[in-house]
Amino acid sequence: MAVVSTQLPAQRRSPGLVARLVGAKSPLETKQALWGYVFLMPWLLGLTIFLVGPILISAYLSFTEYDVLSSPQFIGLANYARAFTGDKQFWPSLGRTLYYSIVVVPVGLIGSLALAMLLNQGIKGTNIFRTLYFLPHLTPAVALAVLWVWIFHPSLGPVNTMLGWIGIDGPGWLTSKQWALPALIIITIWAGVGGNTMLIFLAGLQGVPKELLEAAEIDGAGAWARFRNVTLPMISPTMLFNLILGIIGALKVFTLAFVATNGGPSYATWFYALHIYNQAFHYFRMGYGAALAWIFVVVLMAFTYLQLHLSRRWVYYAGESD
Image (cartoon, rainbow, N blue to C red; front, side):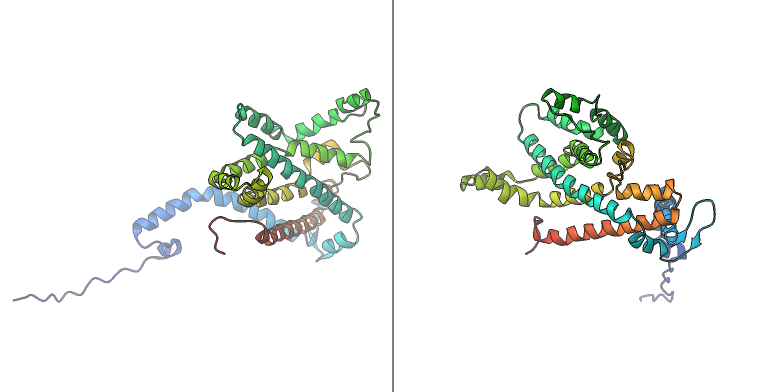
């Protein structure tokens, strides 16, 4: 005769508050999740104290008048209105920065891609050449600026000395209003061609399937046709990545101008980031400097969005559906 148990099945215990907060379904998962948060805590604290906190504070200060010595006074949108209508250096510094970026970014990308293609040929001594072309990128920006101040020295620098050998009277590169900005562009291109941009291009080129290149060659495609129709589409995501980083890096130009020319002569190299720095830390207009910084954030985001939007027309991702 079968024995019928009268004992009710044990009711499942509902997870506690801590388990629900961490999304755990058992005590073991709760314990593992808590230990995970313990190890994550240093990063969370650093993110909050050194990144999120300053961002929120700068957003608040941008609506205030604050000179460090006294308490911030809320003034609404006055700082933003002043930037667009009452600051004589706002538009010139922004335009100068855009001009600098328009020249530096394309030249840097094309030069780095050309170097990457040369170093992707598999010739003897490739590793040595890769090291040599990467070395300028390891030079600290301040040391680089000091070095080029000497190279472009009007009377003692090697550039004007060599120009003198062929009868050309070299200009005062960093002391001339006409030549200061081109001189900084030359320095940036010298330091920017190669380095990380070249390495990223090199990684992209090594991911191009050799079968496609060989098939194109069998079909009679020349070197230029293979590059244009096979290599460029395959490395277009790499190109977009380097383009976005290049534009952001160029728009943030600061150290070179600060050390080499300090924005001069006659504001010839007064870039936007230098304008923010001087307003905030030289004139102690912290509120106005914060407003300039937030305007700069909007400009960077707009450029990045525009690039991502336009990339749909020319970037090819392998495996994407039509």
